[in-house]
Image 1 (cartoon, helix red, strand yellow):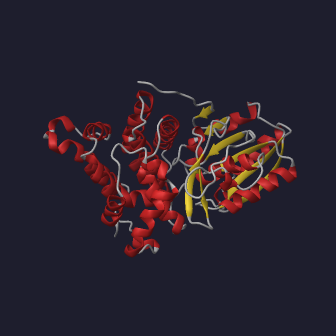
Image 2 (cartoon, helix red, strand yellow):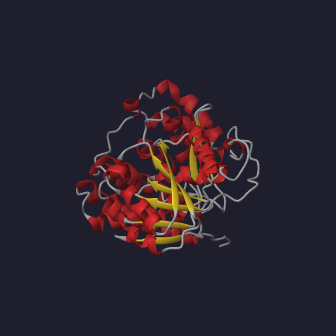
Image 3 (cartoon, one colour):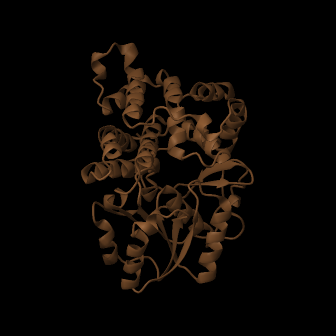
Length: 392
């Protein structure tokens, strides 16, 4: 019952909220807008809407549009150089988790010397203290997948070392975030599912982490409940604004979980996969690992698994005690089936079974900090066992 609580982000949540951004006092006079290298925010008009809002408030901008689905360090450094050269005094991340994460990392490097990896704590990062406060960050999310709009974390891959590592501090929280479910209506079916499961696993991992608090528990269980109920509707009918809104809320709640608890070793294992195979969507990688991972941990924290099963709608109290924890895994598998993502395989992305020892080592070195969040300390052999059992 001893914990700290700090989420300083102002949140505009709900359908149509992007329009209200014009009424807000933004934290500067020239923005670096960070978007992905894809076409969606341009083709769907979201970038133009943002630019019109900035112009209406007499705010200048520069566009950086190179961010990959798994963001890389060289683009962070390039974006930071652009922000410095153009005299940007704040950063706007527009898009999914990759764009918003990148905006945070760029905000750090726009105000600090050296290389981004100088400040990363895990893996080969030097763990140096961030000398200067990052530029203020505004987040406008167009997906429901990471909760990064209300947490301090940013995940970037060092393409030279194949390390995908999370980083953040109290100043990498966005100062202002917009969660407008109307911007999510255009997300395709498969990506809707991948992103929804990413949010789900932020909540489930945060709930079973050894740093969970009564506050993070409340956020996590509500997020699990909403995703279980509404994600299948979003996958089936992406234009259902009510379902999109509830999944968006679940996603934001999962960001609150990540601000008050932490992810566990499941995320470390996935980061190893997508660091080496960057075409693998993060949510898909988590889905691949999940049945094996949660089956392993069900017996380690059975009370927590039973509570998560109940949040997913399982009447666990009617089950024999020995079946209650694993009923969460059964509900998870069923949800994956309903959302059409049950049969995705590591081999579909070129991952080979003989890669697993190398990937397990990478997970334990690059993001060792998340292994420390587990309530049961995994050995290297157990890490490989989970990954072998997940392999298809």
